Length: 390
Length: 228
Image (cartoon, rainbow over all chains, first blue to last red; front, side, top):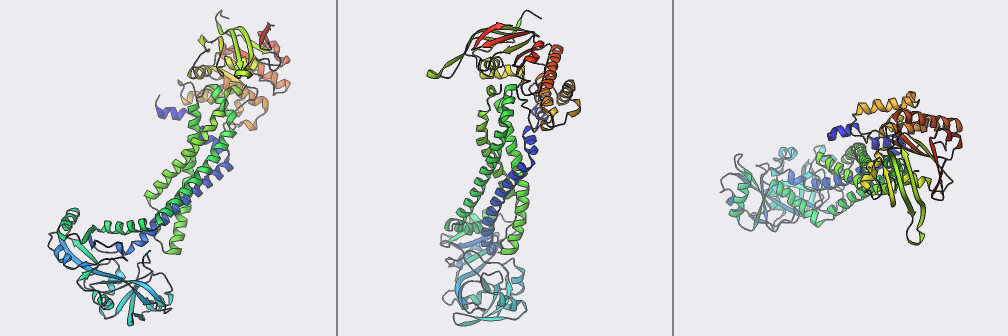
C-alpha cells in the first residue's frame, strides 16, 4: 500500500485533537504568530537598515565602480588618480568612465544655524550619473557657482528649509565662510554614515574643497558597451589598472558598503539576537501547548499503545500537531507583519518590504521551531504505559 | 469448542520490583482457555488478577514460565512481538478510555486502522455496522462527552470487537456502570462474542453478571485457587 493511501486511511488525530480544543488552539496560534512577527520585524529592520544605507549606491548609473584601494566606505574615501579612468577607457568594451568627488564637511544648518556635518557629492553636470529624476532635472542649476541641491530625506531639523525650497524659493547658508545657495531638492535619505547629502557640480565641489586637487577623484563610474561581458571586463580592468584602485561591479560596490557596516557596527549582531529571541519565545510557547496536549491525552495514548499502536505512531501525531501549528500560526503572523511593515514604512521612511525569500526563511524557522518543541514534548509520551491501563 | 487452547499458561511466576523490594505476585499459574470460552477471573483486590490479564495481553513482559497466546510464546518475546500480539486482541477497560476529540465512528475506526488490508471506505462501513450492532447507529458522529457512561462503554466494546479479534480482554467493564447498563453491556459482549466466536477473559467483582460465564477462576494471593 502506497504512502499516500496510508495517509488517506489514517485518522488525522493531531488535527482532530487540536481543532477539538478551539480556545487552546487559538492561544497557541497567536503565540506562534507573535513569534513570527518578532522574527519578521527583526529581519525586516535589518535589511531595511542595510538598504537605506546603500540607497545612494543603488542610484548610481554604472556597471563597474572603481574606488581607491584604501577606501573603506562612502565617508572614508581615499582618492585615486584620474589617470586610472583614462586608462580604463583603453579597454575595449568600456563605454564611458566618469569621475565623482565625495567629501564630508561642516555646514551651517540653514534653519537652526548650527554647524553640522554633511556629505557633498560633486559630478560633471553634463553627464547625468544618478538614477534620480529630480537631480537630472536640475543639472543646469548646479552649474551656477556655489549652488547645491539638498536631500529632503536628511536627518535633522530641516522642515522649514524644505518647505521653502518646495515653494521654489532658494535658501542661502554658509559653508566655511562662503555663502552657498540651495536651489532645489532631491531624495535619497540618511544613512549610518551621513545625516544629509548635498549634490553639486564637480567645479563647485572643488571650490568648496580647495585642498582637493582636481586630478584626485573619489569614485570612478564605468559604463560598458551592451555587448561586453561584465566579468571579463572587471578582470581586464583589474589587471590593467594596478594596485592603487579596486574594481567592483555595481552589485559588489553595494555589498562592499554593507560588509563594512555589518563588520564595523553592531547592527547584524543586534538583529540576529532579536531573531533568536523570537525563535526561543516560539519554541517555549509551542512546547507548552504540545506538552499540555500530550499530558491531557496520556490515557488515550496508553490505550492506543495497548491496542497495538507503536510509539512511532504517537510521535507522528505530535509532529503532525507541530507542523499544523507552524503553518496555521505563520498565516496570521505574516498578515500582521505586512501591516506593521506598512506602518513602519510610513512612519520612518525605511525601505522595509516583505520578500518571498524572507517569508520562506521565517516559515522554515517556524517549522524548525515547532519541530524542536515537538521533539521535547514527545519525551512525555514514554509516560504513557499501557500496563497501567487495567 | 476445539481442544486446542487459545491461551495456555504453564508454571507462570511473576515478580514486581528489584533487589530487596522484589516481591512475587503470581505463583505457578496454570490455566488453559479454549476458543469461544467466556472465562471470568475473580478474587480480592491485590490478588494479581490484573497482572495476569496484562501478561496475557502482552502489556507486560512475561518473566518465568510459559505463556502461549494463539500459539505464540510471550515469555521472552521482544517488544516488537508484544506489540504485534496486542494488535490481535481486543481490550475493554474499566473506564471507557475513548478519545474525547474523536467521534464515536472515528474512535471505533481506530480499532481497525492497524489492520492494513482494509480501505478507508471499508473501515467506515465496518465501524458504522459495529456501532449499529451495539445499538448506537443513531450517534455515529457524537463525541464521547455527549453520551452516557453505558453508551460510552458500548462504543469501547465496538472498538474492541470491530477488528474481529480472537481474544477479548476486559477489566471490570461494568464497574463504573449502574446495574442495568452493566447488565446490558455484558449481554452485548456475550452476544457479539458468540457471533464472532471469540474468547473472552474478564476480570470482574460484579456478582450480578457471573451467570454469563462459561467458567470462573478464582485468584487469591497470586495463586489460582479453584475453578468454580
